[in-house]
Length: 428
Image (cartoon, rainbow, N blue to C red; front, side):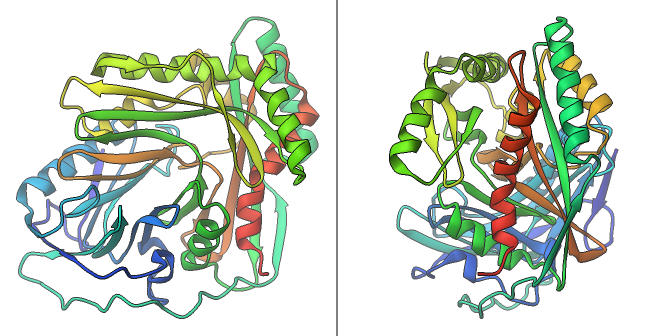
């Protein structure tokens, strides 16, 4: 079921988009005006480049099993009617939509596809701004200048989410029993932590902090879901597709020599290699029907992040049909990296033992243009702002569980994966 929300009026909006080249604006994360509502800030940033946007020219919410198809159908209609003027020809220029989709079709969180009023981008040394507005209601172009530093949310209070730490390790132990009994091969179990701040938690603050502290991940913000994901679910660009799969994790110590030894042990870990193999296989199987050729490396590499290291594999292919980046993301979701395998059996275990609604955590998040090109990550290392009280945010972390998993070790891994959001929320 699709619920269009376009300035509180139903239907497909007619939009006008104007893209112009601009001088390098500096730090993209610092451009969002301070008075923009939390749910109207969008971002997709990595290593200083990417996209930042604000305002809302149009949006749509979809729910249920057809949330991907309904969102894409709406975007196709909007794209067909849009009037576009541009003097920049790089991915991300022109009218684009940012999206975030619930992990489960049964979640009330559904999906949100947002077309911002302003997008500022930078890629390969080219910078631009796109203004998007309803036809006949053109607004003056805003000045693109850095804004005052975002305010910290102040003192933070943490509390258990759906399960306490001991309860969650009990759930992990039960999951291991089911795997060892042959009911399922792998299950990705997640947990949530509730955070209450003394002052409103602004997405401007979180985006700036995450993009600085975790520059080699994709810092995203869509409709109140904010995080820094290391996992690219799928990128589609001019007929080529790529997916980065992460599965198998070890926490860093901060000592370079020790971390190098840990990276070697991770690369040799049978437990982590098994978990990683399931994830790679699920992605390759989902992409293969859409590609004429594919490259699936035989062995993973170790991806070093500030807080953890992951086994990682980049799968690439040549597209052989007209599937959009969003359609490819839908085909890949949920991969074994966020659900498990077999998918249906793993999802049933998650529903039984997690005792929470993941919402849009672990679902696809990203952007696409009118040609269907775009980038979609998996919403990991993230938090969901309470739409009614932005002093409250729910943060999430998950771990892949296989036959050799140890519950206490999985709890420690989940704590390591919560660090990006904990650090971003904390004032220096």
